[in-house]
Length: 253
Length: 262
Image 1: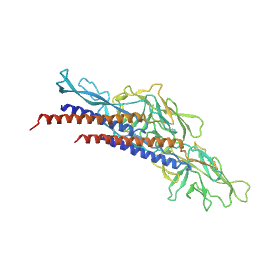
Image 2 (image 1 turned 135 degrees about the vertical axis):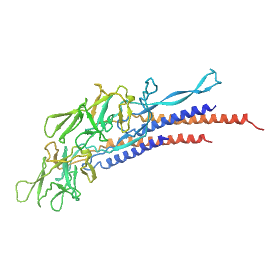
Image 3 (image 1 turned 30 degrees about the horizontal axis):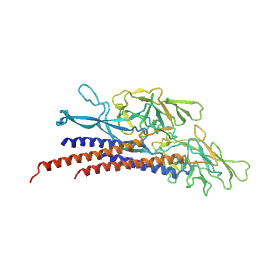
Image 4 (image 1 turned 30 degrees about the vertical axis):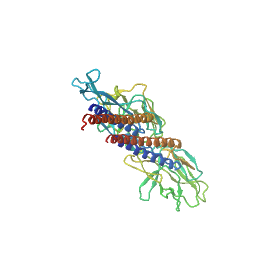
């Protein structure tokens, strides 16, 4: 009899987690390069608790618990931003930035220059090129990123175009094994970064918005809320049942 | 209930977003104004199950982790330093910069500020000043009764002085450029100050070494696009109300829990 309460409780805890994930997705709706999360649940069979009087005698009670959060790495919408150093990746791939903790990977291509003319992200971490950091001269004009990531600029009043390196983009075989570190950064999680496929390209002057779909998140939220309420209803019923049983069985005259 | 706080960070972020957008819209007609953009990033994650952790002694590993995010934060409000439209004004001291560079302004506290707004005036001594009365550096003084003032593309200022038949050269306007102009600090009045992030200014005549050229009788309008700002405003407003809905949904779940207690 107690089981109904605990089965219900396990689901309620799981629903709480799902609500947390939805809240995080919606809070990051406007975060560039953000990828939405989902939670997966798994059945957990209790070894002790059994439904002894149910039809096939030896049926174990199953609880629910969360098994993992799956990140949806699908492409976010591209928004024109106009900035010459705003980059978006089309297709699979990440930019590489040098943090004090080592290489980190990001989809947020809102870059700027630092006082030395190096390409950095919004936290000031240097963006990696194929051969080390990318540096521009103070007199560089019309910085252009080709679709493969090759950077060119015009220096001063000279008319010829100078190559300023190539931005590094990498991909991973198993994106879900990447470790999220906040700030839009991922660490490799033991994987070796691979070169991106030829279909992956970089677009200048655009930013990749988050891929959160607010309509889906809102409906998921309502679903969670209602499921939570119906569980609480069920648990109240189970409690009622027990209360009635105690009252009937232990009736004292 | 973490969802409550997570949604609260979302509401705070969107509130700031609306502030930035409304400032952009308010400055739509400000000469030389460069629009700002609110940049967000996700906060840290709590790993309830770490990806790649061993699930058995046989070396099987968790293929996916269980990470719960704590919301959103604002990383910064960088300026979008693109060229604004050039509008003819017909006023002879109005000067627009086409391309890179800033005019240098000598502040009353002897600091040097930088501006893109070339709506210059003349003070009582005939000096070239900003609308606030701050001197332009290098200083240019117009003699009394000077007419036919001309500022050419490379910044040479000349005027017709009484008694002369040809324009007399009065000075040379210079521009400053920064390796990271997004790193300049805005102090209002269309002025920017140099910071550690912007790098040191490189000063040169207009039209040389990649510096922009000057256009007389024109002003640079702001680079705010009304359509973009309004659609961003709508997005921000909706995002705010969705985050508010999460707060009330989380509250609803808590209330349900409370009601189980009788």
